Image: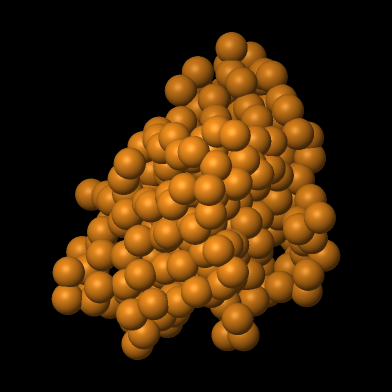
Length: 112
Length: 114
């Protein structure tokens, strides 16, 4: 059973627009929710992460919104740039262990 | 540079071959991982090593055999693979007990099984 569900599978956004990727989870024991960014030919790299004690975290143009009651979290990329074109993965884990559960990924294309 | 180095970057092998993937982390971490990445699927955790001891084996077929000789090196030995094993194999490391939530990935080995 897939622990983390991610949508959409692919996304095309105009330069300057807002990119939104959504994830949902079931396991209420998860207490850490990172987003990873992967460029072609590279491994995923941590982009931004949130813990469930806050509803939002912002780092530059990247924001995570977290809804604990709905068990959903999303990544917002403001003022999207062509250099943001990559695959984005959400993940969830329980910090007591070291198991990470990943979504299926979203391929983002930002067109000039 | 992420501090996690994987070799080779690409590998093509027949179903009867034996090959090994190598991973080295230069970050002083105490946990290392093998993940399998296939198109349109979540990253699949294969193996976890904490302090050189294997702590997770997610029902991976025995044709995949991990080896962790020390906390900096991790191998994945491959033998009699199937075409469906073709994928990107990613190594990662983390510091469990410190900022253990941060996984650092290598660039992966793209494996093709003919």
